[in-house]
Length: 101
Image (cartoon, rainbow, N blue to C red; front, side, top):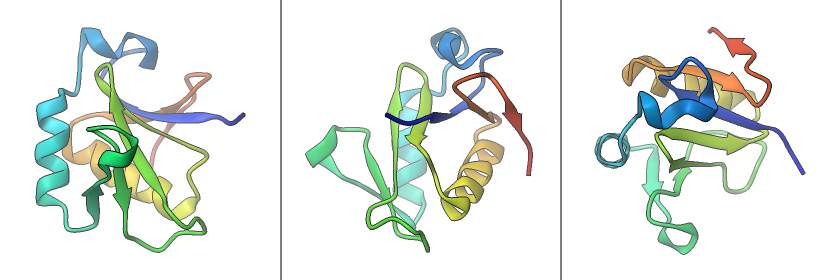
């Protein structure tokens, strides 16, 4: 069990499909970001991050108009802010706490 953190454009992350980050946008972002690599073992939108991390395989995944991960460490959390900024989105947790960098 763990808390998910979301990159979304929606007012509430669970409505991400209403104002989505599209799968195509996510794939294009991963393609141009040298720190992200698709990991098809875990789904067609699952990406591993190569940056410094406390975890062996820090990851981000796309689903239903949002990008998410579970319990990011500080370094992945900072990466999420950069992605959110680039995609005109924001970072929130499961309880809709908004985070700013």
